[in-house]
Image (cartoon, rainbow, N blue to C red; front, side, top):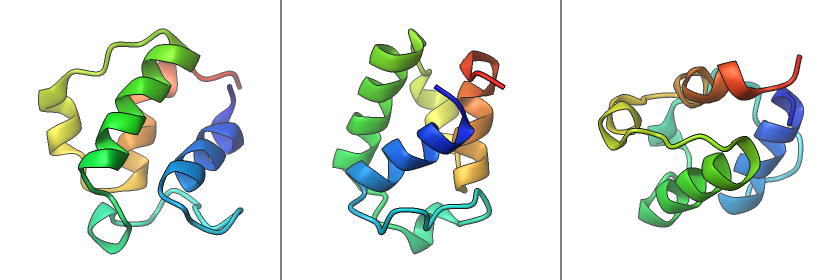
Length: 76
């Protein structure tokens, strides 16, 4: 999974228009709810084989923060 595919996954489970996310968006401005959190955790586990720490996820304030949590596992 690369960065664009990561954004596409986020857009899909937050039901956003394709191509909307660029990384600078604040999570407070998005439909980032408990279902999105669970979907993010499942996506990271399934596609990136990464167990996201709940404490790290709780500190995320933007899409860029989410990206930083998984960046080591993304393809360049």
